[in-house]
Length: 168
Image 1 (cartoon, helix red, strand yellow):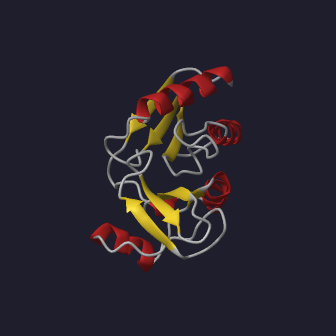
Image 2: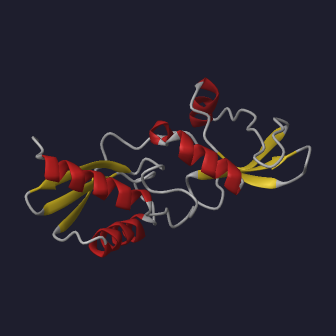
């Protein structure tokens, strides 16, 4: 799509608006930093936002769609289309470093985007660094945490429980 100078500004503004839309389950991370927003298209007067859920059955997606629409309307955009794209499937590799840092500061261990993190997909859970004290002396207590995209862990040193955002 060829963009005029004014549409480039508008597209940039759309991304800025979306940076302020927080994930309803983890309110310290935006849907952009989480990697849910895949693409933004500006066609004539229509704003199209492509989103991909972290899990195909993610219950937060209807709220995310509503929050994105509301934020864009509040910013003066009209004729908004939110489209869900399931392929390729969302991956934690789409999360920004800013988002991973925000997760850790909030007390959720961010995903390990390397071979250790991918081992979780095959049932071999590696030690996850505790977001509270930084210890690697942790254990998984439950494969599912507060949401399906997280698992529950406990630090053996500081004894604090914490969620880990699973790799996939």
